Image (cartoon, rainbow, N blue to C red; front, side, top):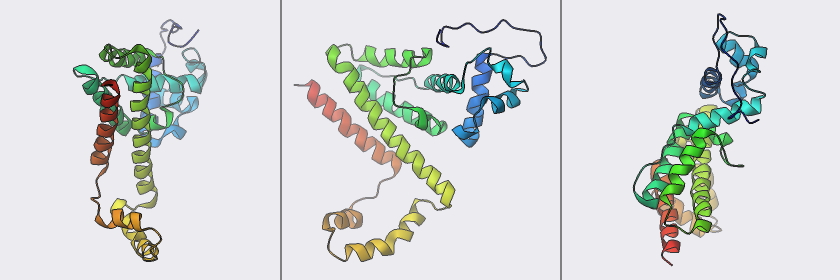
Length: 226
């Protein structure tokens, strides 16, 4: 029986009350602070002041705990708006904001679909907004938006992690590469790249994300108009 359907143990009069929700909240606190490597059943039990074996009455494995954490994060992803375009934009922005609040989420998004109750609620909201789209096109359109968001947030979070690891923000990192790029571009071997680096506007992550999202939604609109 999947964890979503498996009943929790009956409450017991013990010094440290326990529930699946408390376990998940504790795991998320650990992951928010120090990443997924900080999450283990032993560490969660320590935070909750219980013995690790008590957790197995609520979850069967760390993989199951990660599934519960991802579904809890989906409770923060609540697309809104009228029509498919507004809802797909809201899905993209809400997913991105949630991943920024919980960086570990970017490592777990993608792959097989999530079927926890919060993930299903998010999916229902999105699919309902696509009720006028051909049924065979619904999931490919949603998958395209999700793929774009996952790729974008993973890059953004990788940049954050690199900044923390090196102590260099984006401007300092770019400055450190400047002399190398100038020497390389001076060879004339990469004229197109040199033009973009020298002349194009250097947009921040927010502007880059929204321009890319607009391009994707424009493409979807053009396809649906056929």
